[in-house]
Every structure is written in structure tokens, then in C-alpha cells.
Length: 204
Image (cartoon, rainbow, N blue to C red; front, side, top):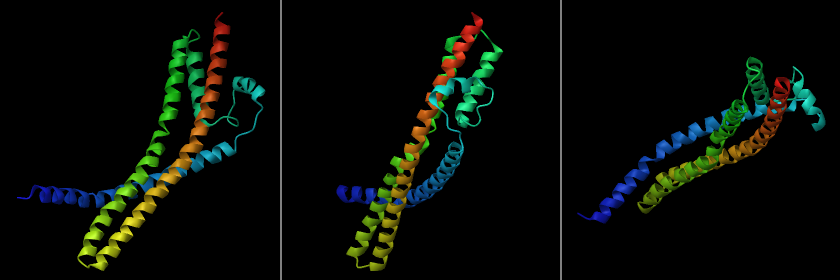
């Protein structure tokens, strides 16, 4: 038995069997990208409606009971959690506040991971979806089957377009949302410093 021919047949079988799973994953990736786009648009609308403020006015605004018009929902949720923690126990340790802060910031960075993976996975799946039908198309060309060749080329080019489009959109979403997360973390750090400082001043 020719070992080389056996290995070639085995590799070809694996490669050709991956085409439909790759196409299915590209469909799922497209749906997920659209969902991320909807979430991105909703957050953009929320931030567009926020009131502008001068940086020097922010500490006083944080101490006021209603910050709905100046902060995003992430900062508001954190502020609510931190105030509840401080009001429940006036002797709250700095390490407890720091733990809440670290958990919140870690969760915010993790929220970018799903979009970040699409940046890599989308073009990768598009490339795989291109190369597999190109191989079968060249085999069909060698046999003179032009119908099979044209069908495989259509699959190859469309999977490339879908994969690249998903990656480009994901990169745009990731870049803008990263800036939003950095802004929220800056506000959360300020909220933590102010409320923790007020708590220490009240206990002394």
C-alpha cells in the first residue's frame, strides 16, 4: 500500500469534511456579529444622550443622588453597588472596596473578549472556507468538470467576503467599545476614590 497516497487521501477527506462545519460557523458568526452590532448601537444611543460636564464638576456630581444623565449604565451599576456596600457597613475595609472595583473592571474587560475573538476567527474561517473549495475545484478542473469548478469558486469567494466583513465590523465595534470601557473605568476609579474617601472621613 502506498503510504503517501493513503496520507493524501486522509488529509483530503479531513479537509473536505470541514467545509460544511466552517460554513455553519460563518453563519453563526454573522448572526453573532449582528447581535453585537445591535448592542453597540444601543450603547451608542445611551452615550449620545448623556449630558456633558466639566471635569472639575464631576466630584460634586458623583456625591449627588441622581447621576442618570452623566454616567453610563456600567458606572451607575457600580456606583449603586458601592454605595450599598458603604451604607451597609460604615467600617468597610479598603480591601473590600478594592475587590469590588477589581471585579467590576475585570468584567468590563471580559465583555470585549467576545468581539475581540470575532476579529481573528472571522477572517480565519473565511480563509478556510476559501481554500477547501479551491482544492476540490482544482480537482474538478483536472477532470474537466467546469460546473463543479464554478460552484466551488462561488463558495470560496463568498466565504471570504463573509469572514472578512465579520472581522472588519468586529474590529470597529472593538475599537470604539474599548474607548468606552476605558472612559467608564476612569469614572469608576474616581467614584471609588471619592466614596472611599468620604467613608474614611465619616468614620474618623
